[in-house]
Image (tube, rainbow, N blue to C red; front, side, top):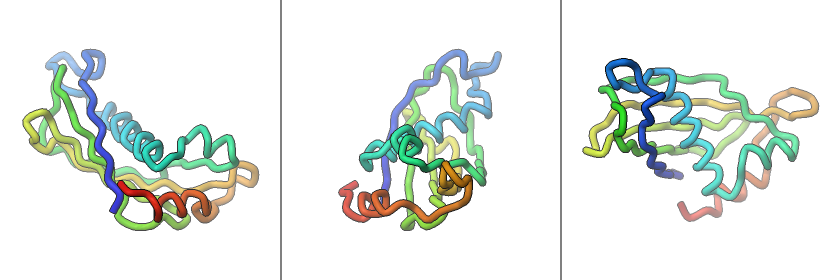
Length: 135
């Protein structure tokens, strides 16, 4: 439904002794995709937090298809397939520069009222931007 693409280059410090991306770094790649997806929508985590909304990850799953390596140029595809409610569900695919699928993942985040620390519905401003955006 709403898809964004982010390119990044694998840095040396993100790899193990074999030059393969350490599996824990993929969570950061997905977060980068999610952050840029929100920016493309016209929002940021910081702005949402400053306006009383937190977005913790409550579920994360990943499937590794093949390894990414030092100096690879990766494309992180981040997608939302349905309108957010109390939760917002992101789908990801990462491709290398040869357009080979490296990994797939999903994260679910929940909207939390910063003051009460309780779940809440997605804010109206986010839903409006979601419905009216062109990407």
